[in-house]
Image 1 (cartoon, one colour):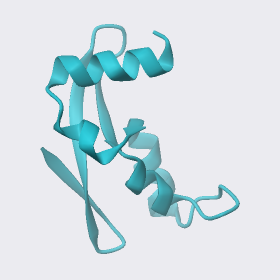
Image 2 (image 1 turned 30 degrees about the vertical axis):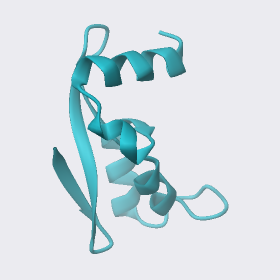
Image 3 (image 1 turned 90 degrees about the vertical axis):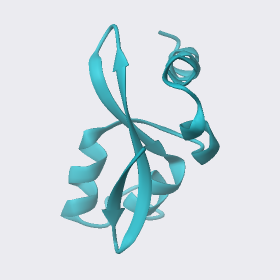
Length: 80
């Protein structure tokens, strides 16, 4: 599992290959929460850049699932 650093803290990311969209990055909701302030505005330009790279955010424990199961969970949540 790879990591991304934001505001001196590491967050897990995963690259997944979706048949419909190709390779995408998935990370935790924890990362999403620190990228935005209480008004839903990016806390910095770096936060915006990171968010644009992430296809979807899931609960941290879901990042431990194998690729096919995680893809299935995300597809169900997105109703793909």
